[in-house]
Image (tube, rainbow, N blue to C red; front, top):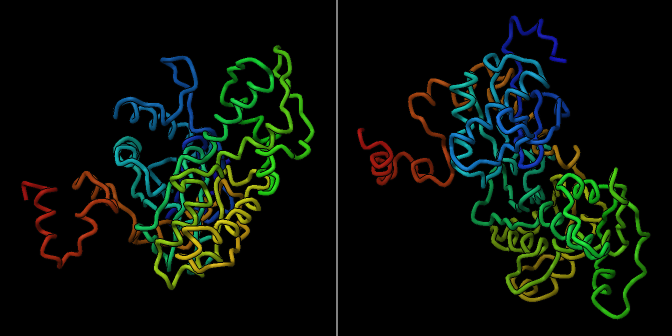
Length: 396
């Protein structure tokens, strides 16, 4: 049900927090400990007669329609509030495509006519849940694993790392291993693969992983039979259960495994922050909840730091991990809720809405601030600032 809104007659109503992920969307109100709903990022498409994913689009117009339908489901089915009455806190990745950001802004401001929107990056929001001044955020989501260093509420952009080592990579490897176990191509749908991963898979220790590639293979875990309704049950061997997530730790010449990008992020940060970053690691994201993953990551980091090229360039020997105060899949959302509840993002606690982009400003400028844009990065007193403004708005 919606919040009791009697007190809202004399106060500005609570803002809503939107974390629109690739696979799952978190939606709720600022100041609350958990989202009101965690649903798949999909909606019923009446024209195609199927459930369609929000990120399944081939043109800006199709993306616009997808977002309109998704937000309609969130506002009017799950939280039952009028979008015109509440500001919005949008939790986003630093690597969100510009097209997606601008289309979402257009939907919120022109279609749903929200009064203001704050765009908050997920690394800083995750760090906010801990309250530590220096934090290394390892976010393992659906498509990518992102590693970002947050130093005194600022993300070290030059050290940002990202690789396609996340849930989709595990699903592809799990599907291949299941085909080998059952001696045929199963062609299982995505939701079945995900269910098998969540219910049966785990991450083994580094020692066991090394033995799988040798003649002295370890004793496998117990196999599991997974029912498929009208189809015969399939066998999930102990080897498959343990090796599905090894794709995250696979070594190659590019140093692109999950522990490698963690060390590379630390290595590219200022030297006086590296020790603190190594001792304040927070692993978040839905994939991070896989049993044994955090322990395996710690083992890999302690081993790799003794190997080249890290042994001579990174003089850190201790790695410490924080326990997330919230479930890993909603950590960034909880940070947005805390920030909005404290009044830092134009919610009920901030009458001026200082950080919120208002509908009037968006209607006038038709653009969002972006860290990759020189118009937003250049200081106002810099001689090149007027040059960038002229190229952005030639009619000025």
